[in-house]
Length: 390
Image (cartoon, rainbow, N blue to C red):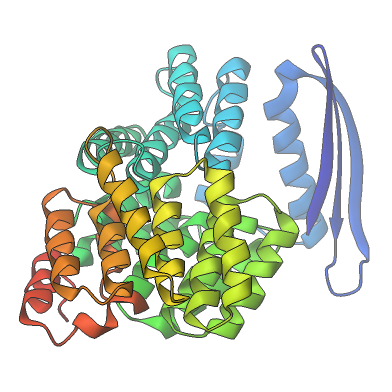
């Protein structure tokens, strides 16, 4: 495992890095670098070379070429990109900030390919979490991912971005899978590809393959709170509730304030009959998100499952009122209706979700909340239109 720290004072950098063997804690290599900010790309190259030497591995020609050619030589663009990724990783309101940072990076370097993937990923999640119309968000994101691939057709990050956007735009599911597979072939060590691909496989009810991808992601980055949270989602869809709860608690140890983890934990505990823990997790998610619609929907679901249907309907009323001004996912409204036993209303909401290209729709087949609909012809027709009938 590579560990390190970076200290910045003005234009000066001090970078400490060490390579540790996880099994016994043995230090394979360590070094300290005192440089100026303008030398940041050279430092990255030196560290990579030192690690390759310490591990006694040999890079292929393509990997060696990529190591020697940084995505940008503009240090300001690079710093803006890093700030964008930090905001993007936090989700929530940080997504709009992330998008702005990536756009500013492109103003500094219009050919900075990773900044285009950042724009694509930001639009993807802005639509996913309901901060803007999902179809418009996905279309803008897809344009950015396509631009990234024009600049570098062999960039794994760009293929991953296009795969995720194609997935949520309800494009051909096989074409989406090919994007993920190509990304893994180009860079098998890019962690987000593995957990996004796992979500895709989980949505298609291929739990064993999804679990294999998640394990690969966690092997590569065992300290990733995002990977742990995504693993919890995959385990929830596989109905492995105890394992999901354990994994989500590990994610919270790594990031105690991550709203998505609490939301998934609340759903999982409620489905598994652990109502008191579900209540705490769901309310925490609502608080951290500032009452974001997707967390309120989980609250409504929790109320319904704990014998409080009137409170669940109050949540529904609040969401329907907010939908008059802002985008509120019909998929989440369907989730509450299902928990209240209103299957016809749930189907109406799911059909409306299809019309708006709602991002969450791809999880309709695999999510436990819609299990009772599988025998319904309208539901099967919806799965056919999405491309999930098989």
